[in-house]
Image 1 (tube, helix red, strand yellow):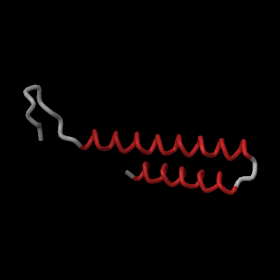
Image 2 (cartoon, rainbow, N blue to C red; image 1 turned 90 degrees about the vertical axis):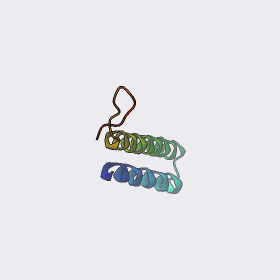
Image 3 (tube, rainbow, N blue to C red; image 1 turned 90 degrees about the horizontal axis):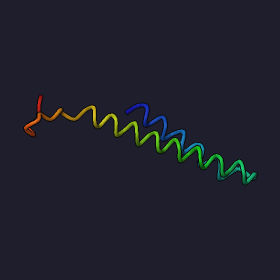
Image 4 (cartoon, one colour; image 1 turned 45 degrees about the horizontal axis):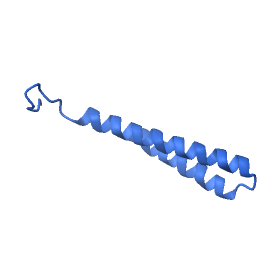
Length: 64
C-alpha cells in the first residue's frame, strides 16, 4: 500500500501545481499527469487487494 500512497501524493502535487500554473497548456498536462497517478494508485490498491484475498478452490470453497 505504500506505493499507492506515494502515487496519490504525486497526483495531489500535480493538481496543486496545475492550479497555480499560469500557462494553460502546462496546467492541462499537469492535470493529465494527476489523473494518471490516481489511476496507477487505484491499480496498485486493486492488485494488493487481489493478492491479499484467499484463493478460491474449484468448488467455491476458500483455501487458507
